[in-house]
Image (cartoon, rainbow, N blue to C red; front, side, top):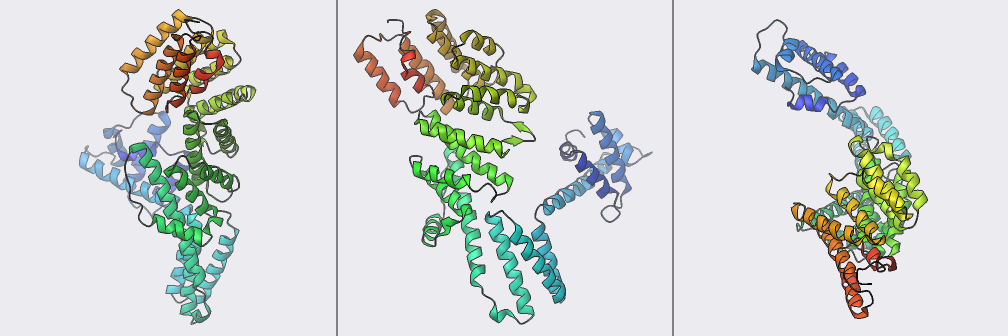
Length: 473
């Protein structure tokens, strides 16, 4: 019973969901099987007591006094799950009230009630005009409403004066916005999973959008520019144009899509920053994070990802915004998942202490950092490495680098992160054992570091402070 889809779905319900579902199951319009009410009451008790349901007790609640029958239990579970899915469908339906109301107008027209249909359509037109969102679905709704207006006018023999051009234009905008949004999704997926996709009408759509000046619509312009920088990461103009358009478009998209738009830009900016790109990329990414925080787009169920928490502190530190970073660390600590909270909190306080050259406090905070998570653990080890280097603890550093190399060999993680951390160890060791007074050797090493494509500590390795402690100085 604990592994059933029904129970797993019910665990996702909050109190409001439970109240709605109670009413649905208790309504004779939707349910006439009393067994479903008994089963739901039992499952509600299990939820409240935080105890997993037991099949025999569940059957007794649904069929009191009867001998246990697993087939009967499966049937009642299936029926209750069907009602639960009906509730989910209705909840999703409520999120699109215009489309539901449009079906009512269509039903009136089919029943030859033109006065009712006209009033519904006028109300819908007014409601659509009050919307601030201008995403692909808005254009689709505008087209659907326009088409129903045409159908109603045709039924009343008034269609001769109806202009179908605007309907065609709305349909074009809806299709182009959706097409470019899908290509962005495919390009992002392609970059991570190394899959090749054919984009069909993409080139024609792009050419048409530019020719017809459709980039005036943010729902089209944003995905157009995103497609450009996702397909060509060197196209900085596309990225910064995207950022400018996004800054003025916060009211034009529903929260989920706006969040996706910000994360798309943030992830790209983080990658460029990690590649050792110019300070401009750190500033751009920091600005995106600040805006996303202000718009509350980085939270899921009130929780902030520990990776976002880490990235924000890292970028602020790189820009010298140490006081801002410390304030952020304390302010958002309780928005982290409880199991990661103390580890991430102390890791980032260690970074602030390190930036202030308070190495003792940094090492004390690192003792409480999360070393179980691969990335956070490696970031903590990197910070320790820098402290040992900068304080001249060469014996500790040599041992620490050996330990890091051994740890990396044992990890199954592949790809960008593994390559980066291996390079961090390799170049730090090379810097430590190169005589900084040997100009030719130092120049050759600096050239290797500068040309390394995957190396997040490139700036630190090339900074003067990382040269003064080499073993052969």
